[in-house]
Length: 410
Image (cartoon, rainbow, N blue to C red):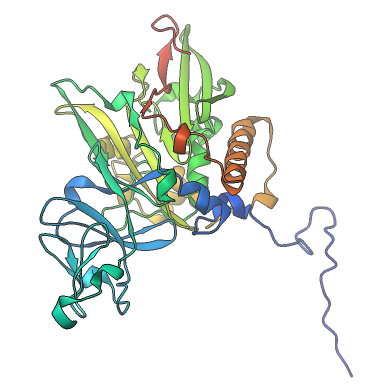
């Protein structure tokens, strides 16, 4: 007696799961490796890759845009970012030693400076008669706001490293505080493992979704930020500069409260105080892809001297029974989810074909269309907005919390 195995018909009856085709995602928006449309777009901008005061003579392994790199500071104080594999025989420069003028490979002692020039080949005749022909792949770096930024695109299209007005001209009673642990994602990760295990776009789109604040942060998991943010807002979205802004209006105790959040290309998020402090947003963060299925948050905030650290305050606001987010059990995370749980729950890369977007997702659609247009521009040999010859050196932050009678905010 022969037996045959039935195959799904490819049809779904009454919404049942049987026969449902596999979900797919938009690869152009989510893939970040070299040569991919999204990866080439991202490589046209500067990205933070480390916190300046942690970059020392001890080599650090960093993964950015699908590439394994080594970050270090030489004896002259210069930061360097080189490909991890030595161009000689391929061992990891992570095991090298940093010297006055660069990093020396452990295998055969080749010495490279911060721009990849080979300075010494101690086993070769006369220290390397042709060492000038061996160059370790490298990327330009600059330091600003206590972060080390890297540019990983074509050198002839390198834009200026932007400044942000909200992080400039500090008073004597202020300082800049750097995010070291991806605390902008839920309650944060930790310095030993700051990478977030899902695609960067899921985090980026979350910024311009004001309605999750009402449900996730004010109702479902209790009041995680401020009770007033549970008021359902009237919302509109606008293209501003090289990004998208969300304008949320709430009537709070007879006062009109306007909250503006902002994303700038390619991966910058500017969110005003979750404590509803009035005024312009004072935090700028970058969601830097490590690869297709993980990313890291690196950011800078302008804070008063002596203030509680941001990571501590953010975690305290979303605690449960006195526990910080990082101290909660798996069951407590299930019962009281935060941004991390909601975004992690979408999977390593969310399946765009499975989505059923509604009117409240207009900002998501606007952002995806903006990204798609700029990815296409790069494919056509043009500079994307906010980069290359279009890059602005000083960016005016529009995000903030504003009470109507207090400001003429846009």
